[in-house]
Each structure stands twice: as structure tokens, then as C-alpha cells.
Length: 211
Length: 388
Image (cartoon, rainbow over all chains, first blue to last red; front, side, top):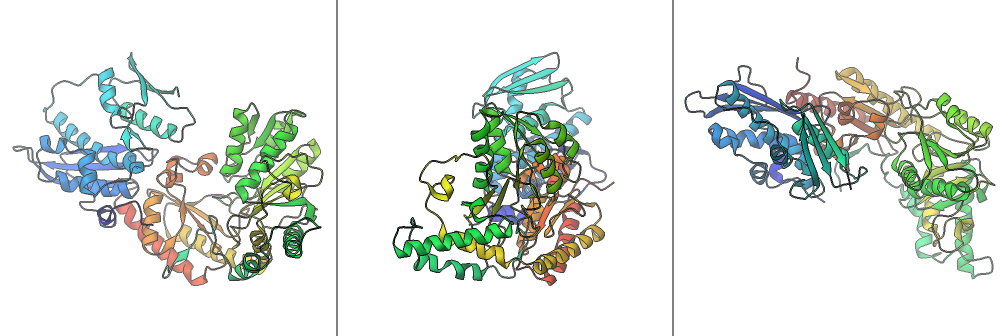
């Protein structure tokens, strides 16, 4: 049986493009952490006039799909304007790689998030953003669309796993419709905490299981 | 078929020995009958003789009587039977408390979880950073309601050996049954039930170049246990189902083919591998105990590197290993063993297990060390960690 990775994924895994750091980067972002197992750093050089990404590099601490997605995302973003690059989705990255296994969405979505975070970082530093967006129930819902249900490779909103969202005094409470001993309970919990925990107005993220 | 394969995942499954297959062959094609009762036809009596002969030989390797050993489909079934069978026999009579460790393999751990859902209480003993059980914690955890202590002989991932004799003596003194999962230790680290007070031992053929799908359970005479699967009266009315006679014969042959000399050879290769990996690659650490460990197991964590990536790169070079990384596991969870001995996720993600077997050659060690060195160097080059 062949590996569940496409030829293109394996090719990028073996020979990742645009690897490394840009020492005088105009913006950078790191998503994930050693604790959650995967980490991607993205570095940008941006033309201040045209807002075109003139150079982009990435570093990865992660599995094959993490490395391959980091690699393809740099190829997709290079030469694009920030506005264009911001719109690159995980789906586009996955398609460019010839598809990724559902179980690996969790690991590969990080690179897309890191690219977006790096762009946001640039925009903030160059006064391109309006106001900081407050964390509302709607915002949480939007963010949870990036948390994957590893069983099917679709997000937890679309697969209707989110039973309840509550935001009160900086505490975000998310109730998932799965039992606490679900095969992927702890993975999804970590993922949710990671997506929301660092927000400027969030003090605590509580994930509960009601399945 | 696999050119130049260097197979170092012998804890997961082993290449079967041709001599095992030769021993099994007649029981597929000539003596294929059911092991009949003593009043049956000749071919059935021959089948029974082969089964009982295999049983006696494996029992002897444990220092046990033949009627103290039953065949199962493997270690998963053996541990399920030991734990649930004792719970079924003693749950209503004596109590509903069991004791184990957090680093057991899944057959033990998940059997315990099933019992917990049925109202049993389970104590998970403290283990130190090498995986050794805290014997004082064991002593103070045993209550009048405790029906079984289940502690592995050797750990499946980090290879740590437990002090089975001391554990057995504590259990004996307190009048509690003791089960040990010896799947990874059996024959490589001999155990004799005449010297070690243990009541139930899980063993399997798949780790010692025997066939897959056959294992066994040692049950000391007089141990209260009930069958957990219903059917006929086979295996002393403890394990129903048509006997796997070719498997049993192959298992017995596999047990006899393991020699102390061979195990010493595996240990020399393992020692050489460990010494070189730990000395020649920076930011590496041994997982498990430096001395009390399986002779054919090495488990090393490489910092700033994720295990699945390392595993795939090694595979591209024809080297097969295993990792405790979450990315590699079916549940996407990091190794419960490395986390259980107080390691962090990063240590689990970067852990690689190398396990040696009969078909490994001395010269493979150097090839593996060089490959790991190059790959770890390359993966660290692209890693955002460990640069400053």
C-alpha cells in the first residue's frame, strides 16, 4: 500500500522550498508550539509601495504534511499582494499538493494560519488595520472553522460538533458534542485553546465535552 | 522484495523464522484435524498430541506445569482474559479494586478503562522518570478490596524492566493476585514462576519470530478466573474456539529458537547504536532506564525534530523504526508512555524506538547511525527551534 501522501507532498517534504529565516524580515509569525507537536514560522519581505510579498521563507517543526504545506504556501504567496495572499486557503494549499489525508488537516492548517498571522503582523505594524476586533461569539465561531475534526478532515463547525459557545468577561467557553474519552477529544481541545488563548481580550479558554 | 531493508521495529512484529514455518507445515496439510477428545479418530489424536506437546514446551520455558498454560490469539486476548476474567471471578466476592501503571500497553490499559466504566476502581501507580514503579506506592495502594495487580515485565516503547520479583512478593504478602504482561520480555529476559511469585503472565509469539495470531496466558494453579468468551470447552474451559494447532506448534518452536547467545548479540548491537547516537548527535536523550531495560530495545528523543518526519526520511532510505509522535499515532495523541514518565510532548514527538531482532546484522548499526545523523541535521536546519 502506498503512503497516504501524494507524490507532490512527498516531493515538497523531501525538498522543501524557501526554507529558513529572513533576518531583516518586515514581518514574521509563529503558529503552534512544541507542546502541540507542530510549529511553523513564516517570514515576509514586503514592498512598502505595492504591498507585494517579495520574499518569503518558512521553518517547520512538524510532520511531512506540515513541512509540505509550509513549502507550498511560500510558493503560492510569493509575488502576491498582501490582500491576495491573505485569501489563500487551506483548501488551495491542499489542492496544490494533490490533496492531503483528512487526519493531517490539523498539522497542515498551521502553515496557512502562520501566513495569515504574518500578514496581520505586517498590517498592524504599518498602520494598515483599523481597530482590534473584540472576541465575540461570532468571532469564536469563525475561528472554530479552523479547528478540524480529524475523523473526517472537516472543521468542527461544519460537522456540528460545537454545541455551545459562550463569551463572558474574557472567558470563552466551548461545549463540544463528543464524550470526554473520544479518540480525538484532547487533540481538539488543544487546538481550540491554541486558536483563541492568545487573543488580546481572552483570559481563559474552557473546553467542555457533553457527548 | 524490500531491497536492503534494515528492519528495526521488532517490538511491533518480527520476521518469522523458516524453521518455525517448517514445524508448522504438517499441521496445515497432514494433521489438520481438530484436537479431538481422547476417544476420537487417529488424525484428531495426533493433532491433540501436537497441541499438548507445544503447550508443555512453552510451559517449561516459564517453569510451569502444562495445565497452567493456555493458548490465545495473542497478547491482547491474554491480557483481556487475565484482567476481565479475574474481575468476573472476584468482583462480587472479594472487591472491585485493581492496580496498574499508567504506562501499560493498550490491552491492559483499555481493559482497566472498561472495568472502570462498570464500576470498578483502578489505581494507577506512580512511575519514576525511567518508568520504574514506585514500590511503596504499590504497597500502600493494596486494600482488602484489591483483586488484581497488573504490572508489565517490560515496557513496549521504552523497554524499562520492572522488578517483577519484588512486586510479586508484595502481592503475595498481601494476598493479591499479580498479572504481568511479558509480551516484550518473554524468552529475552527469562522468567521462572517457581522463583517469581506471579499468578498470570501474558506472552505472544509475534515478538519472537513466531507466527502472528497466537499467544498464551500462564495461569497459576488455583487462580480464580472465569472465561470472558462463550463457546466450547477448549483450553481447560477458559478459552473456547477451535485450537490453532499450527500456531501453537510454531509458537513452541519459536520459544526454543531464542538463545541467550542470540540475545547477547542483539544487546551488543543495541549498545553500540545507543552509544553512537547519544555521543555523536547533540540534544539527544535516552528514554527509559540505562540498565534495567530490554536487551534489544533503544528509545531516543531527538530535540527540535518531529518523529514522523524522521521516520519517513528513514523509510526512504530503507530503515524501519517506530515513533512516539502524535502525528504517527492513530489517535493523534503523543505516546502515553513518554508522557507517563513525566516527559513533555516535545520529547514524545521527537522519540524514535529501535528494536532489534534475529535478522539484524552488525554492519546495519553504522548505516543507521549515519542516516539518523544526516536526517536529524537536515530537519533541525529547517526547524524554527533550537537555533539560539
